[in-house]
Image (cartoon, rainbow, N blue to C red):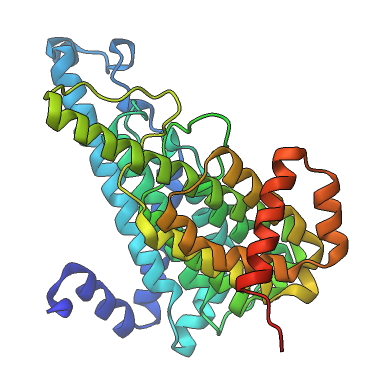
Length: 364
């Protein structure tokens, strides 16, 4: 059944492509990614941007806006198709395909990274980036770009230099890079995009660990963003549940205010907390190379539990990863973190250390 889908057809086409066809597909994807990354001036819905002429003058603003939105959706759909095709091309394994892919890998890496890290208004040609349609298009574009980068990274036949680490890590951190704890983010990544970023980071740790070791600050910045997004998503889920209960009781359909709660496209759920836990556990497995950064990640956990405490289920899911992070740190890092914390931070850190001693530390 999967083979009868358009994606299955494209997968078969890529697998069976000869050298000329593969080059044609690869050049087409690179061209589409390059053109999609450029701003499209013709999609503006302001009257001043409409083309001159009698035909344009005859259009009412609503008609022109509808036409511009349809054109924007077409551009976004072409970008998404190009990203799907890029992921299939990146997984190529035949010798002829690999030679072509290896030659184009630097350009492909750069363009996929540009799509992943671009702000929403560039990802979607729609002129209202805060609308749900534009936000959804941006989220899908980021997810597909990160997934294509994962396919490129996990192609064991390709070689990457240490200087490529920044591109992969910037792309992996992009979905959550804008999230801080003190102010609610305008948008949060969907659960699927959060998961795509997790799988890229996990693949970097497991298959290209040297890339992470050479750009550790970028890696831990990506982990910080994911932890903070998890805190906001959990708070949003709680507020949404409370709002639903209140709505059922009062039948008031007014949307909740933004103050203190970030809007979520879809609930992240416990799967995202599980992703974060596994990522922290895998990070701890690289203690020899990353031990100097363990205290920084642990300080982000302390900040998360202080300013955006998780619900009971999400926190229970995350804590084994936090304990692995504690086990990664030496007494020097822990004492330094304790000395630089205020009383509230010291209390949270003490609670974490107590939980680690009683439920996680190996006592062989």
